[in-house]
Length: 158
Image 1 (tube, one colour):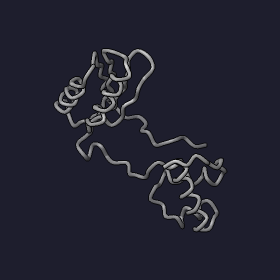
Image 2 (cartoon, one colour):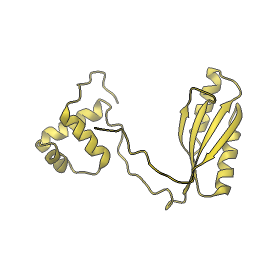
Image 3 (cartoon, one colour):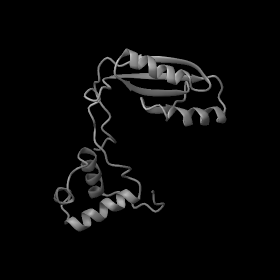
Image 4 (cartoon, one colour):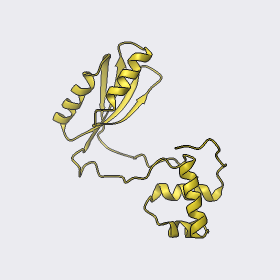
């Protein structure tokens, strides 16, 4: 839950955020050493950064290929009408498709950009069918990923 009163980030806060983003499993004692604080004030800062919404969640980066989701594609989606009800319905439905790992409302030539993961071409066909069955879909265009060059590793820090 985000707090409305947020304190400006100082150098130590930025190092804490950068370190936790790179290694969310670091112990508080190790983190405190890295930022030259004792453990208690370091933990207080982490809790403040969490409560102010700078830290949204903790997690692990998983191997998609080892979990049988080795293929990735981006799907452009155009809706047949641009009304608030249509957008609400699409948003409500698209989040139920587990293979859609990201969904972005786009300004430009189409309405949404989806990132999907699947095992093989049969899996792609099945997820595309789920997408095209959503209400108000006018058109989709798919771009298959042939090589992952750089993965999202979070917010860039100096």
